Image (tube, rainbow, N blue to C red; front, top):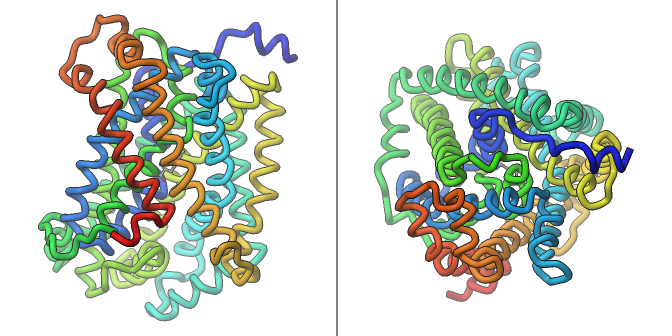
Length: 456
Ligand code: PFF
């Protein structure tokens, strides 16, 4: 079986559309629909969005191109790719941090994805949107601190993800991304139209579009920088792994630009689906994680056919999460296949079991195990903090430095321009940005995550 694996041609994306949708599917996730709206709400709306867009352009896009090019050049997933370029060196850390981050994120991400799927049914059949706003808050608190139900839905997410991946790249990831991403888009358009046509929606639009710089703090700027990593799925080898499934004729910078635009547009659209409705019914925008699971059902409860819109919203959230869990799982699976010669099926089953076993405490941390703290954080928050704030920036920093100083800008540009065939002003600027600008900015995010900039 192992030998057979090695001899088989590497599975790959069949079409550019498939690649773009799969990479966009990875990028578009809870970060866009759940996190982006509430951090925008907390940090002053449009002023924050402006900074976020600059971060996406200055570090997100170049690092994505860097990751895709490392993966395609090596033809290997993340750890093996670094090994191939720089055998027996510390650069392998760039790959190891990615696999580790994917593992840790997959311990907690399916918990929230599971809530989303559960809420589809709660909206339709449990009268969620008939409760009072206080009742909805209480319902959420009781639900997430429960034991069997959230764990059941978490398991469902892990199983569906693994089942899709068994199909491979072309017949699993690509096929499902082509179905799920357009579905997600259609649902989002319906919700944006509903939200924008409510009386009083204009206030929410103003909140998103008129910058109030007095509300923007240094903390907000650093949040924007950090989020640009998480939302684009960078720093953890996903784009390296996906890059290894891309044909040599593909235009990598074009792919990355399309993925970045799709990710940013969906985040902004999610804002447009949420804030106008929140303001129209007189709710407060900056509501932390509860914005989506408490404020929104309360908003839906005030509109005709609210239960249907609520179910659609949570389906959107669930789908967005699922296309991201596919990519997170693929990083670990591809690592086991490439590095340890395991069969794909064995890798997927083992990975799924590990995700579930180490994921259960993340669900319990919302209830019975909430007081179990490590470094002052419960298990769920610790996983989120360590993976998003430490491992992702570290992984991104290593990729940027690797491309800028080890592989060398010339080699990287050669790969990105397909041997000089593609010419663009982006490619001309790319070397400077990846070598100097991106590493400095990422270093700032990293130092901030470690608490070393608190005194500034
Ligand atoms: N980009 C996804 C989101 O915005 O929700 C989350 C994510 C997926 C982060 C995959 C990192 C990752 F590797």
